[in-house]
Amino acid sequence: MQPAIYTGKLRHRRFQPVLHEFTYPVFMVLLDIDRIPSLMKISPLAGYNRFRAASFFDRDHFGDPSVSLRERLREDAAAEGLVLPEGPIYLLTHLRYFGYVFNPVSFFYCCDSQGRVATILAEVNSTFGESRNYWLSEANQSGAANSFQYQTPKALHVSPFMKMELDYIFTFTAPEEHLVAHMQTLDGGDCFFDATLDLSREPWTAPALHRALVSYPLMTAKVIAAIHWQALRLYLKKVPVFSKPDLVLPKGRHEHPEGENPVARMVRP
Image 1 (cartoon, rainbow, N blue to C red):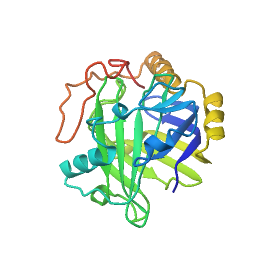
Image 2 (cartoon, rainbow, N blue to C red):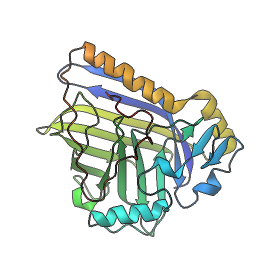
Image 3 (cartoon, helix red, strand yellow):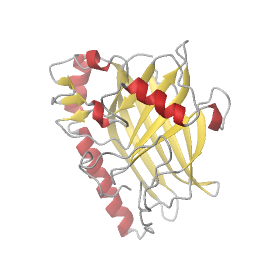
Image 4 (tube, rainbow, N blue to C red):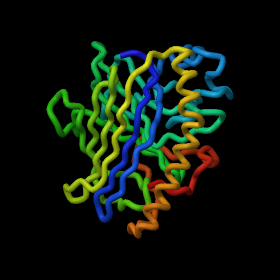
């Protein structure tokens, strides 16, 4: 497993109460969290904690930005009664493009000392400015030992078109030449919605990053635009709307500081 640029598509499908499906082209980056400052020196267009065409800012992920990501992960895992594996950790995420970022979900692939994925953290953000971490480990693994499939209850209001009393099933492949991250949303055990990232790897090089920036301009701005367009389509299809509940943060969970998320209070389909 190595730092990389992943390009491909994101597909959403809703099966109930109406059929609704869309697919968008996307690109994301896979970064070794212990090497991010040096990795972001790959190109004059890239930067670490400074404005560039593509930037990584420590504050764009959960926890105290003055603390290393590894330590934030260790503390958050401990709050859930988990021990963070001691191997490399790779983050699949969107960068900040021309100063703007929104990550509906980022994945931390936490490896053991042999470099095998042992635990995955799904960091989910809502357009209401709230964040929830879902730790996916042996404790909630629902498939075979090496299937990377996990089940966990929903704990964050993300979409006004989905109620809170739901469950998620996450299924992953290891981030190698081809990467799949698939999420099913269950209502009473029945899947009524799923989302799939289907991506292919390119090496972490300046030419590959430049191609991605040209091929997928303003990536995260397009994410927000797509969220609102699909929300409008669902509203016009008369899909029921569920009010946002008051946020209750369990131990180890985090809300973005006020003003940190420029799209707070917007809806997500």
